[in-house]
Image 1 (tube, rainbow, N blue to C red):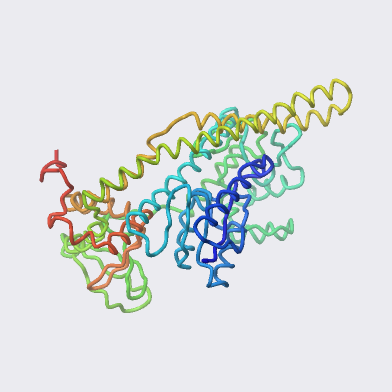
Image 2 (cartoon, one colour; image 1 turned 60 degrees about the horizontal axis):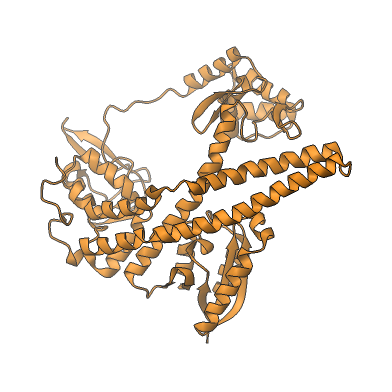
Length: 494
């Protein structure tokens, strides 16, 4: 029998206390292992969100798999129980792990079909989007709080949160340090490094230059605050005067005057030299030709000068290598859109869990109020706990509201990515260098280059599309014109 480990996860302590999800996952995966002749040697149970890498139990599972080479199978109920981020799948792939996802009806390994691997990649993308959608709804509530003039997070140095009154007040100890840093920097006699030293000498507190830079530019100290890119008028008390704040900004302006470029080069900032990892820069020759070259920061380099027109043709290979043939595109789109039913099932499961939790919180509120009236609990205890429960009630209601809002565009994002991969090279050939650079930056984060070869770093999920196409050999099946299927030569020009 093959040795296997089971991984089960819930996102929060609330889900753990409700006691339904983890036992259900373990029962389901144990039964799956028994039916498929797999011997379960370890079980890892996680109470933590999977939208970011670095979970404790996941890390312990990886360490176990690294030490025990005889165990190469991981069983998880479905994709979003195992991970909702892009890094963890690569970690398991590097270990050559065979992943069993019974509810997704998938077994993913290096020997799996390319279409299964690509579909799995889009399942990961959808799982991440689902998690981010819930986060957006929580942020919506915080934005409403900001519009009321209440800063929805921890305030900067010199202020503190008053948890009892749910307000922000001046910190009598650290406010002196905050006022002093503005006073000193407004004179124009101190650099940020010198200011760090002076504040440390006066107050004995070490502050980093970057931290001071952010504090001195923060309008919070004059009664306003920035939340999600918007400026709001706060209800907190200003710590310094507007005149002094403006003087500090003037000092910054003088020290950091912007440098303007005479020319904007299309591919600058996208390329690095494969010989020495320096940036590739551009310059004008004979007042009309644009050439790209290595900056030579680390000394003489073998990278030759490249004309922009020639470089643009070479870079076209990057988008050419993510081409998806029309027949494969149709299959993947169908598979992706079929996930709508799966998402509905997930929403229903989440909605049921939230309703149970909401009912529990409201029952606690009602019972505690009766206890307060009967004198069994004190008024202070009632005030503290009722505020905590009402805050949780609002959060649960916001999450339930987000589940009611069906957003098909989240699913369609995956379809658009597939269609972009299908049409990218055809579009690239018809664009100007500036437009080509924009398209390339959507597909890659960086590209190293030498005299003969390109070494692109594809963004997700284009890296998965590139790897799948390379292994499957799609390139051999496409038209020589790389034209999107079903379109005429001028179909996209109108």
